Length: 393
Image (cartoon, rainbow, N blue to C red; front, side, top):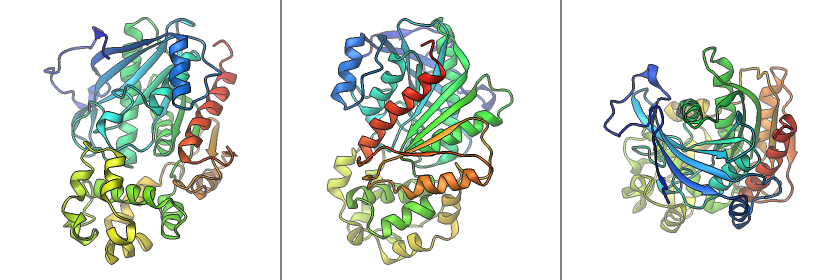
């Protein structure tokens, strides 16, 4: 429930002119969403299956809407969640949490009343950090459809969310320190690494990456995730959701197909694009779509087995988070041996790619956990690691 409008230095009405690119990260508005006591935080974490051992402070949450750019570089807005501890240090170290796959706008961290991504953000904030969780484009209060697994727009939306969070934190007299811890789960794993890369390369940014904890991420869709999907090593329901979402979302940015009928069989082709417009939940979509063999055409399977053209180009972009750069900060990768949504080979490939540039990114197996459980366990482990670097919290 929204408690009220917070008037910060840039919290203006929606009618404010859209920003030019030089104004990326400008805070359009900030809304106070909820105040949690430490008991409230512990309950929220417990109810969603998260570890509440590090709960220390109450938390105030804010929904931020800010200026950014879309996948084509045009000015737009996006939203995200900022959570700050009610007491503790005045100056705060931020933890950016990049969330996993979601289908409905209403499930985004800044608007959902209860969710795992909200719980993760609260966990970081209650331990003494500023929790900063972007919704990405097209989710939460953002206009349009979400460009799923589009690494460039995940990066720009996240970078601009960090800037907006810095503005809001200053306005409530809880300024952010320059160093940022960064974590991400599933879709958010590559997004976390890409954000860290952008911050490391941004000489004018007020922020810099201190560490990255990436959990069960699809860092190598072509080399690891697609082979696992085609070999039936991916949960069939999850595989149908992920690949359908990817093909529809990427076709909005790249000419992968002229008509859905090229890749999707009747009668599903007629409605496949509307399923991924942000108004349908994963449950609704899963109940509508059949198994892949009944959904995809032979041409679609050929494309997945041997990517070419715009689809291959999009894969190269999506799989770039671990390649061809040298992080100057520690990275830890987390996987789970019973994860049937994101193949463990993704993390192995990421470690190999980083190792080519002399970077050791150790992989920790969190145990025989499924995909959602790996995210919850990974957040707890990442939080403990971040706290080791900031014992004052």
